[in-house]
Length: 325
Image 1: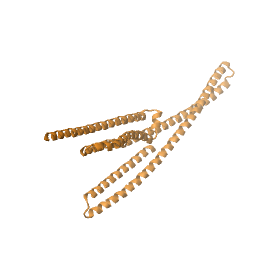
Image 2: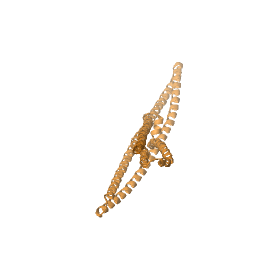
Image 3: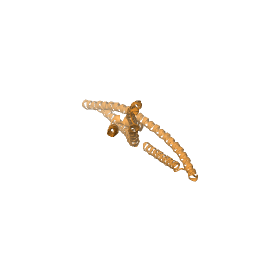
Image 4: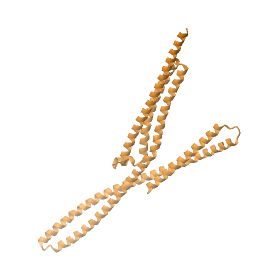
């Protein structure tokens, strides 16, 4: 009887040991799966960053149109990252739903100890999903200032390039008009000589040929001047639109600064309120350290958030001053 009981005990220990090994193996597979998903996410993110950066550095009309508005670059990157995060989270949600559907059947067949290990396994899966979300959010926060800076620099270069082209066209037009006046003066001189040299047929024919040549050159220059005036009007219109766009961006910046200032004021009020509550708790008796710690953490977070908003406000001001120059 004692030997049969020992055999049953050994058999039960083998079963529970196997369950623990299976659970440990499932955890290891889950961690490897999470790391693999994170690696794929980082590789995809690196590919999108390289594509956008090469488009910004490439001196073509496509790059200029892409970087003429800083918000377009940033929204493009945010959209890519959010789509990737949504796809990853949807996959995790589908897995969680399948596990929730199967959970009642599995928990009925497990012992309490195996049930606890199964719950720990489910929690570890949730940790991987949250870790992926945090990595995507961190990537977005770190990429925001860099892409805004590159887009703003490209927009400034595009505006300066258009202004230089307009100035060059204006200088060429002025030179052509001077050449036209010079040719007209030479024509008058040749015409006067032609009138004097009519008696001599040979000289008259030479003067007539020179006069016809000058007439052709005058017509050619007049045609070039007309074409250049059309180009100058077109470039001036583009420059006007660019300046209007810059003024619109300036108004947006003013609105953003106003919103940031209102948010800073609101957070300051909330910070003062938290400080007041903290002072009351310090003066009161029988106050737990947990409540004091929560208020101090809240005070620290509000101070950090206010400092972050002030830095954003200063960055907006510097960027606007560069555009206006």
